[in-house]
Length: 176
Image (tube, rainbow, N blue to C red; front, side):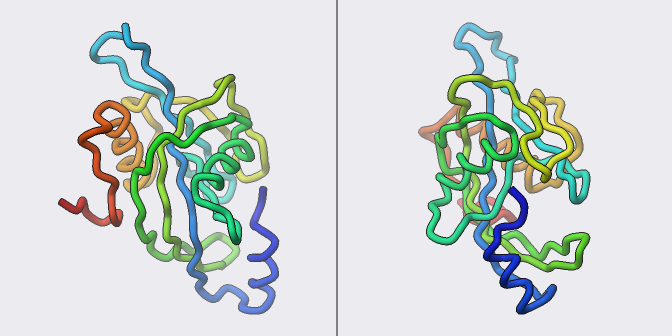
């Protein structure tokens, strides 16, 4: 799905002026079989964005009245065709201002979650927001913004050691 209609309408009124929006990042990890070697790593589902050609986990804007975990499930299906279930909160943080190619300026408060696949793991480009979709070993991901690499690392840590994991509050530094 492209830009939500309510934002299109808002942009008609305010132009490219900054907006502060709720966003979601869904870090979708594959299962690692219990009998896998100790060095086995999960794969992460990534999309290559059509607007800036950057690889990222699934991301999106939370619709008015929508819960973040519901938005994560919706965005994963819309962008990759994969059904997911939210397993854990990875963190919440402000994402500095982003200027899109069309001049729109946005800052996000992002809720990041770890997701697992429900059913078929076959992914494909399912909308016009991405040019490519793929599963990558977390040890061999394509280049991406540090914030997303951090969230993928957090997702793996949370999956492997859920009892000791504390969600990240802010993306600039880890709170202790």
